[in-house]
Image (cartoon, rainbow, N blue to C red; front, side):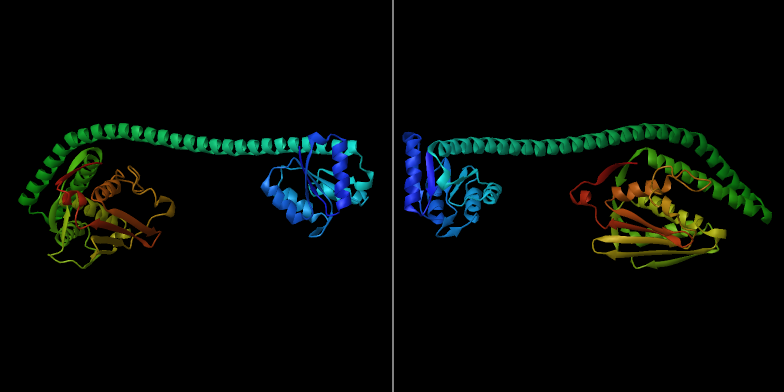
Length: 403
């Protein structure tokens, strides 16, 4: 058993050596250090089973040395061996991680041997407890991490299942909407075409000016019905996006003229900073649907068929920015996040598909659409769309889009 004695008094060191021989010299191999520094060097050189230390050393006095030894060598038990017979000092020694406190003049060979062996056993048990606690803590941390990972996995899987369920339900609804749209298109477009033709013939043959407002109203309602059918068809079936290069300003002018005929009391201001040479690569048919829908919404938002609409457009970097601002009734805050959802509408008439179609078309063109609105302060739709399509640049002329 390796024993390190820290003692600067040769007589006391010899006494300890004799006591160890008396209680079984062959069992103990004694190494002596006269200072705390020397003892720390010995502890670095080899492993000791126990340390016996005096409290009065040339380079350290008191319990600070005990604390230094136990902090640097926590697995080695330290027995305080001093001439001071003070019970309070013994208690303080134990608080500083000393394993035992012995008074030199009262130490016998059997007491020293028993103290050494008990100290080693207690330290070994303490180290086992410390190790067991460390392992338990590590397992607790690992279990906590595993639990957190499982919870995250469950949350992710639940989200995936909900998303898959939602997509499945949406697919089912889309199939129903597709069948409904096909039926409506077949059953209503033929009668609408007949009504439109009849109104046209009446307009040509009648000389009664009082009938003209009624005929205009018939044409307006036919166009509204046809727009509803078109939105249903656009939303419910896959379409092929056919990119063309054209002047965006011309398409804007065309859409403004078409929608401005809805009311002569609404002022449309154009702030379009584009010319005939400002070309965009997009599907003109689909962009026409987007612009007509947004302009229709702007006209319908006006109270008492009066107000102002501002259409602006410009180039910003690689994209075109198109904005439609109206002075209408605005949108309630709780409805702002819902306006692009399919079938959501606050109107007494309408399918709630117009803006959903707009959003899908703009996103299929790698752009995005934003909305700002406040009650009684009007609404602004802003479309950002790239001037050139990345798919087309890669040599792909068409893009399949489903909406």
